[in-house]
Length: 142
Image (cartoon, rainbow, N blue to C red; front, top):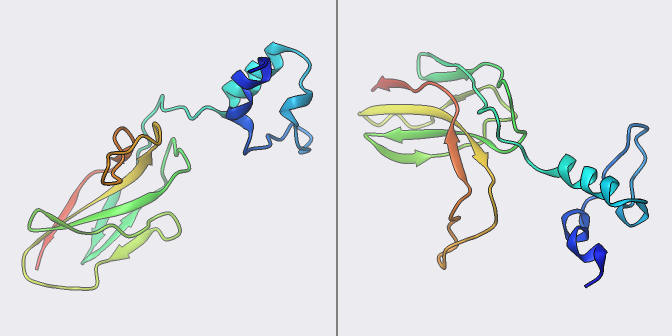
């Protein structure tokens, strides 16, 4: 494998954009330092955990803005009596109301996906990547 083989897989499926908005072809980068700079710009950074506040209005949960957002999937985790019953998407809508009202205690928290790698167990579950909680938990009882 030539010198391109060490860095090209990182950018094979992506075409980075430079400041003017035009595509950068990684094969045309002149020096190793330019290639290294491109690689570092593409790494996901998890230096700051995203944070958001959520609040209840009746049975409807509402989220504020997410600070330090990684731009990955946001979801509500809804538990009924301690068991996860729903994980609806939360990025497009800032509020959610669970449609069923079975008696019991409900707990809701906002989560985001933390990607580490694609390593999976034989059953398809991720080994290192996972959803992490980024908000306070709210509870209500029906």
